[in-house]
Length: 492
Image (cartoon, rainbow, N blue to C red; front, side, top):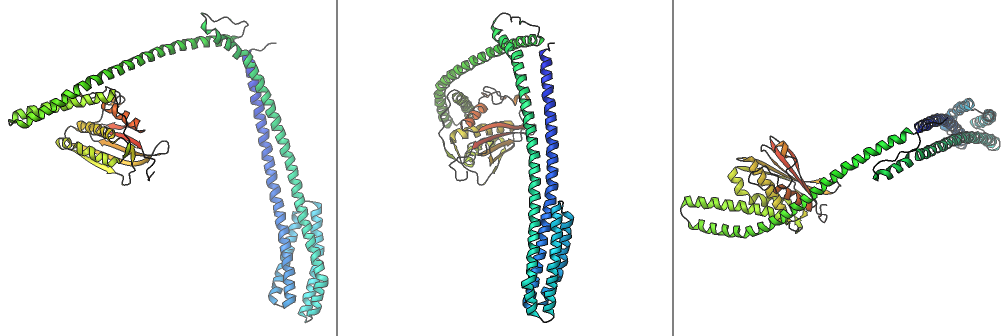
């Protein structure tokens, strides 16, 4: 009886899953049982060790107290002796109750009998000393009582050794349990690996090889029919046909991308042409501006002066447009130097002071006191700030506030950056234009080139920084700029 490929795969996966669940369950239960046994063993043996230790301490206190009393006759040591005797008896009773092995119980009984002999000699020596026979008391203590004391102490040590032996035996038993559990886990993993290998071979023979043949046949007009009655292979063939459709779609997208590249090349050509034309126009514009300025100064007629003022302003606007085209087509190389952002912002505000006064726009500043320097081209950065401030002024029309903040922050890569926020309280940028404001030749002003923000972003990117629209609502617009801090700066 033959099973279909899907049935074989399901059986193999079910077996792997069942074995994994059983193995995990057995391992967890065994680990839990071993852990509980270890805890019980450690708790019991540690308590036995503590009892043995306290038993030896109580015995030692009795011996020391008796010796010091017999040497000096201080009644305080006699009081210590009376206190330590019942403590020894109490710890001995605990040792009897905790002994789990026969030899430990026997040790406890032998300690009790030996202590009776020692206690009798000790009491006799104390009685002789109290009865004004100190020499006989000392002789009895050193010749007989101490021998009984050594016997009791030796038996206490033997009890401690027996406790240690029991602990080692318990650890050995638990180690064997752990080894058996590890052997079970290793065996289960071996079986799982064998099942996974068998499943992999089955998939390789039943799916991957036919799939490779189908892929090899994609270049042909029709996919060859596979022999056999496996429905899975036919399904894979249909899937490959769908992939061919997706490949055709990707080719279509690739063609569209190639057309976009061609358009980009055309745009570059237009940029070069614009740069050539702009260069040719700039010189006559400069001459016209000088002539207009000269004639304007010579005229006394105020009406004519207004006309020439208008002509001068239009020439200035044309010169700005020409400058934008030149910057778009032939960007200048960076002339990097250490710059203080606050100084550049001061110069920008001073440069546009006449326009700020004419439009009743107020610039508010909030600069961090210890702002580090940046490595940048001051002229190009000033061009970015002029562009943003001009846009804010034009958005405010007649009166408003432009708030400029500069501070030190940590960048995404952990390095230090200088962040500049330019925020106005104008009407904001239309929602449908916010995604495109940094595209070349896109603008919301009728008399603009649509290159200002594009040039600003390129300049910031060339400096290793960036510029983004931080937010725009009906109550204002905020642009966020950032530059990396000069690594040679002492504040870095």
